[in-house]
Image (cartoon, rainbow, N blue to C red; front, side, top):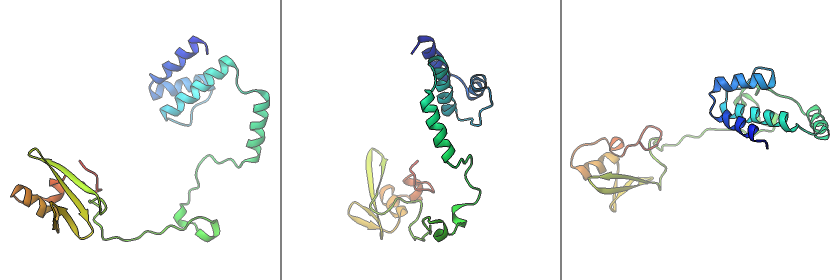
Length: 168
């Protein structure tokens, strides 16, 4: 590849999205439908290289046209959602939700929650029937926090658990 093409392609990575849109218009002669920076970089880089070194061979171009003529072209996804479609008539998998009495703030049973407190690593195992800490079973994280600190703490706050089960 020629050195000036390499520099031009490397310069694309330093451009902002609006600059890439302008460059796309310059290279392709039309407005891009996408604003995704990585996509624009790849498309522009391909076009720069194709212009400098030649694009697809005539044989490859004919083959691509044949494939495209046989394919149904869809630019956007269908507006109706999969939930509204009848699973049997479309041959798709039927989706169902299920209820669980597991608190979504907690990791699944078997997971271990860890926290450093006053230089000591605290490890609590989540169980179906509560929590295990130093061989004892506790009904709540609050009880474990009180055991550790001697003061009342909200167990979720003490262990840094957010509403979706992620750690802080």
